[in-house]
Image (cartoon, rainbow, N blue to C red; front, side, top):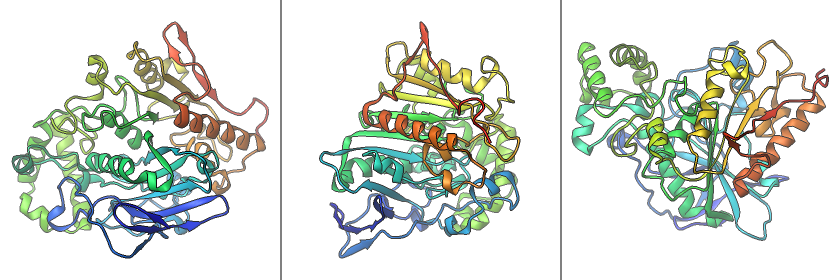
Length: 433
């Protein structure tokens, strides 16, 4: 039982930690609160039972038999229902600690249209054993999370970044309430992979997050001049393209307020395609410059020296998005991560990794998202014929991530132009089955 400023929260006890599942961090963004910034919760009476994982944001389903369905989404026990009421987080805390614990806040991937905060590869028990509190966050996706429109901008002065504002609200909730769970609100590190890492890039560029973070981990989300298409549009471009596309489809803003989440999912793809054709941005429904939560792109923030002056751990995988299995020198994602570090000449705390473990069981190599099994310590849930050396690699990564969250240093040299250290994450050669 935890007493917060909002009310009592009852979690569950496991062999290794306490878990609080489905804790609300904002009012449900439904009805008149659709396409509004998240609103703070009202206090409650009685005890909130945090004993089950929350719904996932509305999204399309993974195709059964597809690569990622087999990898991460095959087990229905880890598949919650979908709901527009999705602003919840999960918290794993150590059973005993003599001092406030550092906090890791995780944002899931999924191209800003999929994913959720309780996927089978996520778990905080390994971090709790290392004295770290892990928080995983659900946020709005797709049209519900990144829909910009002139009518919404006229109402609020900005529109489009609702999913990003959810993430900021989650950070603020953690800063306000994590002490009740044994956490240190001055030692918060945000982490994300893929779209979650792109979110981290946006968050460390946002004026609304300044002064709130201790560190950031960017996994396969790009660095400086990333090949991944994110944060490329400025205020007005997305709104105009969306309005034009809706006009061609015979839709008004009022019409969309009447649609169910499932009806919006059916509209999302044709709207996405039309907006992409008009803007040249192949991923338009993602955080964009709105002159409120983002005043500039992450690249511009790096150029202007305005990204948060905190510790960074950044990296990607050998067979990641766009890499084509190229050598590191020819891997555009890896090279953008190097540039992210070298653009911060005044920051001595930028650390770079390169994940090269070719997972057994198929020929996909060190694929996009492969490192998640290792850095969450959930190899026992993986279907692949893993070797003891995989568990050794996982422990090594967990130790490094936990040390970074705790101290801002993963235990290897920082990447500097004069000392270009890249930590290779792999099993020893010859140790594969």
